[in-house]
Image 1 (cartoon, rainbow, N blue to C red):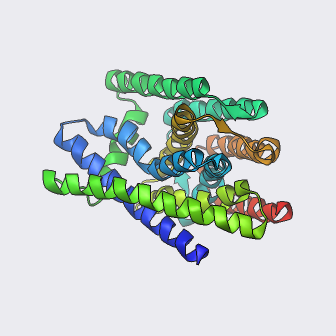
Image 2 (spheres, rainbow, N blue to C red):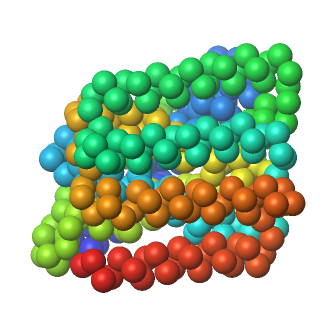
Length: 317
């Protein structure tokens, strides 16, 4: 029964996340917000909404290991699984200037998390600093993009315009937002409670559930986005969406979660998984930079590395 509840929670969470994202984009467009800003902010927070709700819900329920594991596992999945699948569909080309900027911030955010992992806890003031850093980056990006309209700005615009099914009627927009937010809350509650019971019955750490099933489920919006972008041959958007998601997950989701309540970092995540996340990032960036593309064979390698990582978790159960 718990597995059915977990699956139902994941389904509700993903569906509600998509509804919230489309409603937020519709609201921003109705208010006259530019496509570049929608792509930079709304899309980033929107695709990370499932991670945010699950992380906060888990932390408030005393299950921080699931919440933190969810973010670490999601970022590993983004860097290896999702980009790997995208490259297998179609080689992923990317713009050097856009990758240099967002890629550098992504690497820096991973390093920040690893430092906090060594400390064993993300305190409230750490979370505030992380959210502040993210906001500062977004504000700087906005004025920089507005001034130069460089490739990063164009990617943000394309990213927003690629999203299908955005409502235009204000009542439908409101319905999307209300239903989406309610679904996110309900789906997160179902999923976290089911994940806790499954971990307890199986005698496994909650962090393992967070790193695997929960992380995969909350990463489904990013997976869907990159599959669509790769299928349409808009591969620069696919790469940018993964880099942006990783930044938002660490600085935004964990930052907000820690502001709500301090987040302890499980010893196994601090000892192993955070370094896997950093290694995946360190491996990914040279792959992207070499030729400014991810070829199919490189995508297959990324995908294989993710499968190897998931298999290794079996030895820790």
